[in-house]
Every structure is written in structure tokens, then in C-alpha cells.
Length: 157
Image (cartoon, rainbow, N blue to C red; front, side):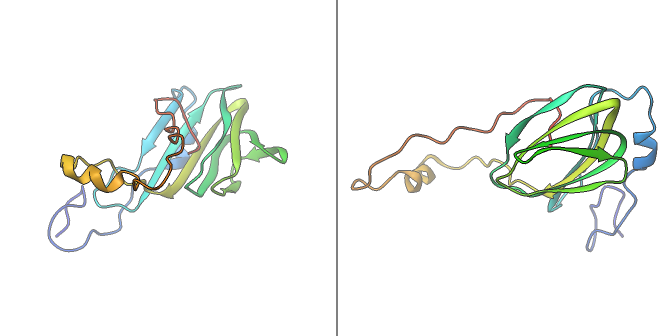
């Protein structure tokens, strides 16, 4: 039998995770992530995020992940390369990888669910494993790729 946290004998079973309507209805919800998918062995990441009125997620580009964004409550604006687009409760938006995306919450704030493929976690490897990452001696090296910013601020991935 599978336990509540998905561990146990056999394959994990489908189960109820949260009431998104209740999360969206919280009048005094804090800014940031209200819920995160944290099940062991998952292949997806998902978050319910709350932006207070007027708050923004600055336009940025996600090079690797397509993201689905479902507006659960409030209203706002999608900030994209093709101009602003309104967001309302019930609206489902696809944010393709490589596309500029940002958000601005309207006067009632914005609560939304994002879902995307899970990023692989960092793994500690033995020192000799780094040797395979070094460029071949006859190949010129280019500038290092910048790392994606991290932090506790809300994001659309």
C-alpha cells in the first residue's frame, strides 16, 4: 500500500494535493509560493504563487522549460515580447521556452499555478568526473554561461 507521502510498496497512487480555489480565495495570503509539488519521484514541478496588487515578476527568458500558467484568482498582465496581454481567473497560458515572459499583478493581486518539467537536481560527483567536462585541447574555449538567478522571489520559471 502507498503511504500518504507516496512511499511504500508498489507504484505511487493518484491523490488529492490541494484546494486551489481555497488558496486563491485567501484575502490575506502572503506574497510568494503558497504551495509546491514536493512528491518523491515526480517528473513535474508545480507551484501556486501569489503576487500582491501591483507586484511584478520582471520580464526574463527561460531557455529550457515550457511552462503552463493557470490564473486561479485576481487579474494581471502577461509581459511578453509581443506586448502586454490581460490575465484573468480561469485563463490558461503557455509560456514556451526561449520566450520572454513576465507578470504584473492587477488591483486584486494575482494567484496562479505554474507547471513544468522538473529540473534535474545538482549531484555531487567525484573529482575525476569533472575531467569529461574540460574542453578538448584543440578546441578554443568560449565565455562561461551565466547561471540562472536563484532566490525566494516569485517566478514564472
